[in-house]
Image (cartoon, rainbow, N blue to C red; front, side, top):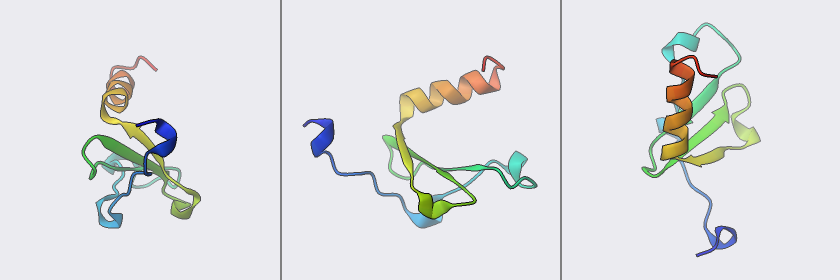
Length: 71
């Protein structure tokens, strides 16, 4: 199946979360891991603006690099 013919990922509205470390800040990214193979990302200030869907592997690599101070 080509990427153009794939249906967009759907995310359960109740499953969105943001880091507890960012609770006091307004500029946050929310994450949704509810679909298994695809992670959803969105702006917590403007949730209607859209969602970015990424696969688990690259997202995990990104978060690991952030935690290790590599980015």
